[in-house]
Amino acid sequence: MHSFDALKINEALLDSAIELKQEALRKKGQKNENLKAKAKAYDGKQRDLGKSIRNNIKNQLTRHPFCPYCGQELYIENAHADHIYPLAHGGLSTSNNMVFICPPCNQSKSDKTLREFLKENQRDEKQVHITLESLGKRF
Ligand SMILES: [Zn+2]
Image (cartoon, rainbow, N blue to C red; front, side, top):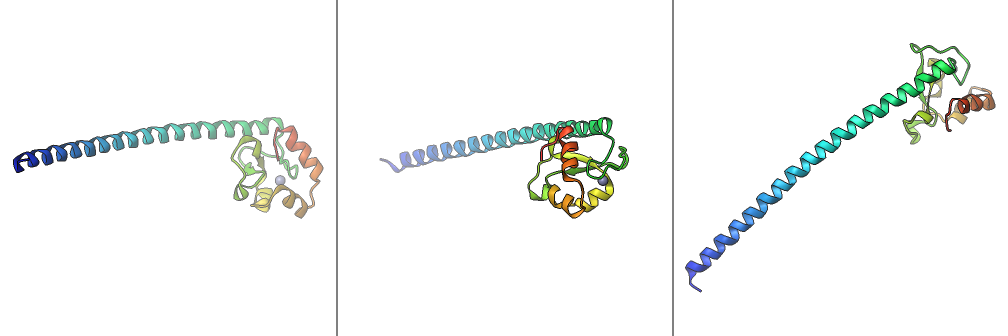
């Protein structure tokens, strides 16, 4: 093989290597665009989900305008959204794990489980369970 031919082959290899690299970069760029689009769509879904949860728990105030933990009257202005099974322990932000409660109960419950909170505050656990069940909550 003449060295001239070898040079040609090296150039051709280099060209194809560059093409492959460019193709990879194009694909990566496309992948990033796809990821961005997916993230955006997911974000939109999350917002919709948040809205439906908010609407769902707002319905609580129409059906049962009282704090399910202590019986205090609730208004949209003073209602606090509580994670029945605490977020800090892995509870989910779903409508059946979220309920409106009064500010003092919210402050007192904090990251406690429902059982811990009710026991500590000597609340009627059975009555609270009946109320939560009637509101379609799972706990
Ligand atoms: Zn309360």
